[in-house]
Image 1: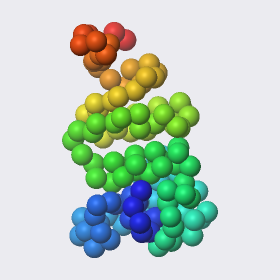
Image 2: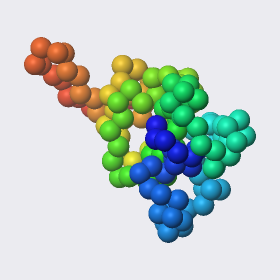
Image 3: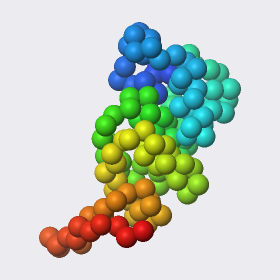
Image 4: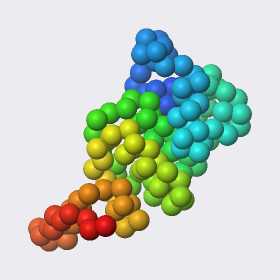
Length: 139
């Protein structure tokens, strides 16, 4: 989390003027929060211009969902996700991963949850002793 406004947490490392030059509005950011089931934070924390110590204000799961809202804001082609939803419920996690696939974001995920396999085509298992398995995930 960065020092700054709630908006800054979503658009990092962009500035508000960068966001506006991309044609993205606060309404768009609200949609990203809604998609990660975090829209309630706007009213709870005082809106987009509220400045807080976000590391202290947000729970672990909320921080993870802010990071995913940031991912949706930037809309990359690829994303490396390292235990990025370990502190959120499985239904929220599934919804977030489904949105990533719908947006054609290629995901490289580090996770211990086999429930995420439905959102991937392959898995790489490393055993910690120099051995690995790379396989297609059978549906």
